Image 1 (tube, one colour):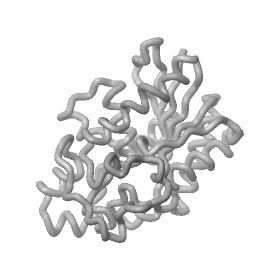
Image 2 (image 1 turned 90 degrees about the vertical axis):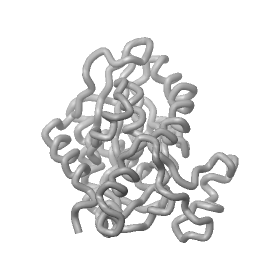
Image 3 (image 1 turned 180 degrees about the horizontal axis):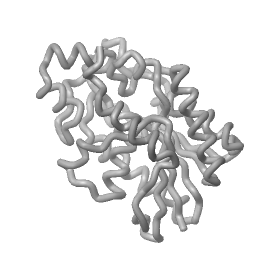
Image 4 (image 1 turned 180 degrees about the vertical axis):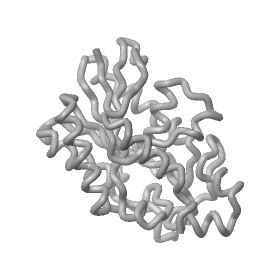
Length: 248
């Protein structure tokens, strides 16, 4: 029976500072490193052993995966990385303080930019210090394909082909697949797997560093409700994600 494990990267340095991150490449904070270690310990304690790893091209997801797998004694498994698993591109919001953005633009616009399914923030300027123009990690991707801003709908549009054409191949071969990625790329995948509506997806918050497990059938449909390996910590973590932007 195919099994899928999702881990949102641990707290990053910019999560800690309450900044919009998106495609800006930042590292894990000390808290994030501990969260990643705990994720690996949970995999080992619960005997959930991944056979292959998929990550984004961003350091915080790669660090999380490496630390988790080291703690689960699975650092040797094959790895695939793709920009299609990257976080949502936050456009001109990248690098901005969430609380200051909320105060400046008001709750309605802030919530629309952060949680709307299909309304992206303004595009990032090419000369912004937080633009990915010229970033060599995307040198093999058509520049016309790379986003300058995204909504969750656009994240799903670029993520699902990778899910269907690449990740699904390993699941259908009976492998246990670990995907270590980001809040929005994982929300998009959960939306697809669970059939969550465009309206209801706004309520879904995925906590950092806690493995979420899907048991799937041969059509890659869940056979039972997904579950976190630490449900209590997941509930507290999801509440903390929901509160982002409100703290100073």
